[in-house]
Image (cartoon, rainbow, N blue to C red; front, side):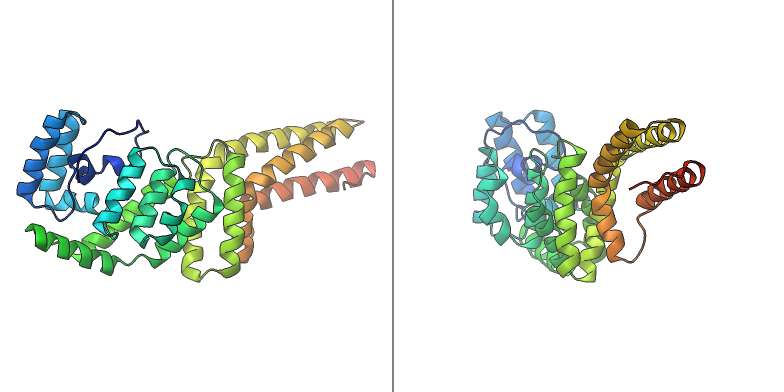
Length: 304
């Protein structure tokens, strides 16, 4: 592989910043090959000397090299991987890579979906594909691939437990990246609702567990907006209880509840599937129910 010009991208999970890609080599490259590639890339002048030094040092350390291996299109034939990297350098979008994504082996598919999520929102289809790939990913198969490549490169081997631990760490980063491209909580909510509905209808228990980890990241993403809407709803409830004529306050409450429910709905879908209350929804229901009871007792009003 050879270094090329690259588009500017936010620092997150970036396939084009992988040390092997920066140096224009593959995971089968020996330490001697890494040093040679460093000199070649330095002469090319595409990446800074600091970037190249960082890439070189990561690859010369067998323990740190593992993260670079797992963040590469490791389980994809190298010629196919080269073609994908070339298209990413040219700024290819998810829609242009759709058929490629669906054919990739699990680790490569996860890595590519996470990379693309940095700059454009994920569709529910690709969140489902990501969850399916996570479910299909085998630490044993990845360990076998790394062992073979390291033997070819003359690099010290690594234990299966190290691969498993590193994959778990990468899961956290990938999950955060999956939500990175959404412009608003409402945009994320629509994709996550569709994904949640599809997963709970047909997935295995293991896939539901992966969905739950994705929804934890989603919950963190939308927490501030839910809290803000909660404050508006609390204000609406106070105004309704204090007002003699509360038509406008009821309208405002209705609109805020609709917005709140749209964002919280993916979490409710999973909670319902697991046979439990979604805590935020339960707390909100209890507040509104208490108001309805007070209005009925004190004013003879009923809420519909």
